[in-house]
Image (tube, rainbow, N blue to C red; front, side, top):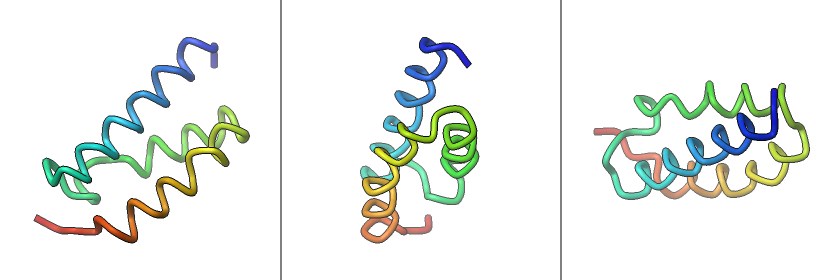
Length: 65
């Protein structure tokens, strides 16, 4: 995966996290888990950087519509 693709993937994950926080989409319907798995396979360091934010978001905003 190229650097550009990694940046796009990170941006997509962060956008989905904001959508979940703003309750535009539920955690389940967002598909963020699949993106996180793709990121883990592509760049472990970036995954480890985003994971604490993701876990905090899941704990706070696990709201089902």
